[in-house]
Image (cartoon, rainbow, N blue to C red; front, side, top):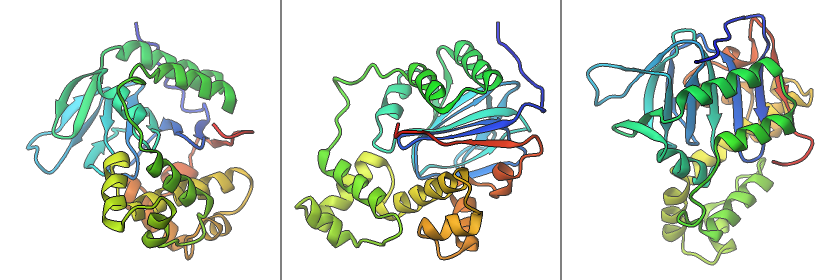
Length: 267
């Protein structure tokens, strides 16, 4: 039995953690995605559908897993969804990919334990959990059983951390390659293989995260975007639309209120 929660008066939630982000609430726009991170999307109250350029007809489903960088259009059909951007280094995606029943092109869809996952997220939405409690529940939902087979290159980890530490600075690829004693072509190759996206796109993706984080701390959009490394709010809005396939207002101007949940410590 699936717990259905359709009360639109319940505030939407945007959880921001260093490793993952999680949105829970309605989406009213069709999404034309080309993301900077792998994503799990689950519809809580009714099916959604997806289509890419190689498909003639959309496929209806309740859960789908997208790799980083894939271009796909999702018709949310005004559903209440969870949209979870997974860890940049690929462990979450690797683990979840083994839990999906079907695959079409680059999209995997229909979780094996879909009903249980929907109920877990419905309960999280109802409880309006704080950052730590929500992260612990999400960690259980995304339980990683692949730790012995999934490999992470420590040099890519170092580059990702340096990009995060210097969000308002455009360190060159040469500087980053020198940091880990690699040639530029080799670093470019390893980074794309590990994260699924080029370094420039990952940097922009992380700046979107930092902007939202600062907004959650009470900074207005324009100042948050500039401090995250965007030239202005227009640059932020363009990048947001390009990667997430919707306008910032679709998330930040919720008719039923949006709570941005900022962690007390890095998670």
